[in-house]
Amino acid sequence: MTKFKVGIIGTGFGAKVHAPMMNFHEGFDVVAIASVSRGNVEIAQQISGVEKVYTDWKEMLEQEPLDVVVIASAVHLHKEMTLAAFEKGIHVVCEKPMALHLFETEEMIHARNKSGKLGLINHEFRFLPARTKVKEIIESGVLGEIMHIRYECTFPSYQSLVSNPRGWLGKTETGGGMLGALGSHMVDSLHWWTNSTFQELFAALTTHVPEYKDDQGNVEHRTADDAYQIIGKLKNHATVTLELLSSAVQINNSWRLEVFGNKGTLVMKNDEQVFLSSDNGPLDKVELMSDLKAPDEMPAVAARYYNGFNRALDALYETLKSGKKHPNLADFENGHETQRVLDAVRLSAKEGRKIQI
Image (cartoon, rainbow, N blue to C red; front, side, top):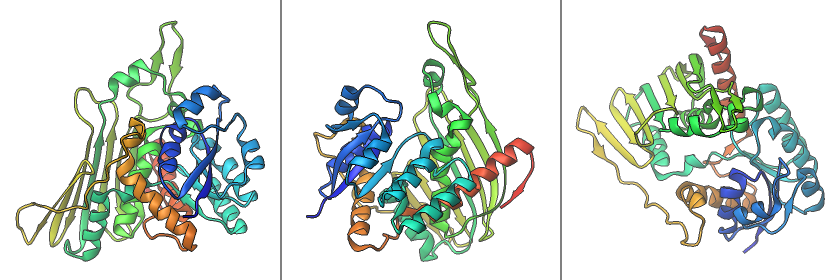
């Protein structure tokens, strides 16, 4: 079986999840990983399982004969790294959100077109069995015309927010905030499920925990959001409400999607269960594809993502082999449309008005 040589930029999520996930897949060989903050090489080797660690990502691109580069760095670095990879003739898989704003995503698309290489966004959640079933049901027409979608997410992270620094994730200027981290997933899923995009929206961004103080009295001031609320309408005329709170206390992680059509209703709970009601009947549980079990020797952090991530890697491998993009993979055009919404949300929150997209 042909193996594609992969380089990863980023020793956070890139080292903890991308590296082991790809090395456990028979179609990929992670030959190198690069630290962005020039961190401890031995720690990066231990976490990622990758022997060759660079402290300069540009040097990795220059020296390694890569087929694919995974960009899992802070958002404000995505554009520069993407352009450099395309200049070297390397396919790019970029973490979400794609960039800081639309001007950057436009540059990234232009560079991809010039290089003739693939530009993909890592929306592995699309491949979770529950989410693929949602798309299948909506596209089947059994719900009829979609009238309204309610999508909510809650995390019990208050204690973590007051006890740990957020680093770049707490800064607006580096692309931090939950809107980018998870709002990008929610917006992408909505676009993908409905084959539509936002037409207008009104939004609020909130920072419930604006600072963190360590034991030495050093204070981290946070400018990025840890919660958001979005009210909008899609181009298919369906209305939408999106909401996320990351500073809840003493609850479990909670995802809930409700899709209301004029012929039926769909409910998805925690990306694990899907229920369907049609013709005013009760909500019945829908059978899903069986979950994939991670290899026993896979690190626990990566194993939590295995069910969707491994399926996404199968699709990526198929795409690289055939040259034809798998229909469920998110590409730079999808990332660009999501960025359009994120930009509009930030403008709406700043100016306190409805934004036409």
